[in-house]
Amino acid sequence: AGGLHLFFYSLHSQGERLRYDNRALEQLQKNFLFRNQVHDNMFWSLASGVTTWTIYEVLMFWAMANGYAPVLLWSEHPGWFIIITLLTPIWISLHFYWVHRWLHWPPLYRLAHALHHKNTNVGPWSGLSMHPVEHVLFFSSILIHFVVPASPFHILFHMQHQSLTAATSHTGYEAMLIKDKSYLALGTFHHQMHHRYFDCNYGNLEMPWDKWFGSFHDGTDASHDAFKTRKKTLRGKG
Image (cartoon, rainbow, N blue to C red; front, top):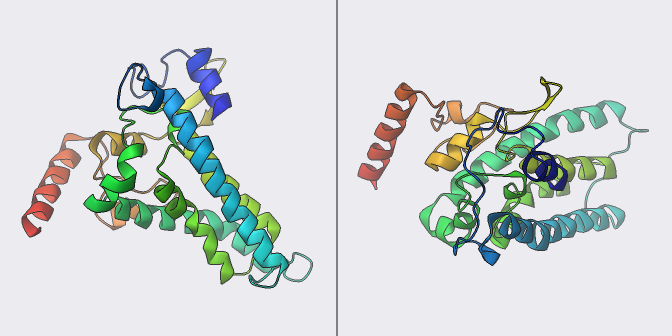
């Protein structure tokens, strides 16, 4: 997150090219700690996010070392080793989708997820800027390895993938440009729409969970009309 923030927001290396929202990240706003969006996001990412990430990682290594979690070795099962590696991002994506939808349940939203949604315009530090309760839920996908065998490599890959993609998906830019050519795909319009409208696009683009479960918004007028109709229907049922 720090490197991306330095490139895009401190050095302005790309200007506003491929940026989704040209508004500056907020300062002098009482709803952020230290009255500064970036400093607020850094605090929650490091004080709560990295702490929770570390606790889960240490827990899994300890469980594997002491026989509480099954261990998968490349030397014994190379095929399964590769399969678990390939399935890990899909599992993270599915877990994130349903945890994210649950976090939009009003009581849980008010308790925890509202902190993340203070960021209506996002930057790299916004990705892991969450309430401690949300961090516990967000990283809990790793607990599947108390059942599904894994190696220390899988634990590291799982946690790094989940944490680092949170930063890249919140850069506020579609891609990093090097010499006017798209060099690295970063944030997605898909998730940018979620921060704008809240009740849509709970997942990511790795898997079409939102299309399959009726929460997709692609930014078109037709999609927005369908989104508003769906919200009215849900409110009517409530």
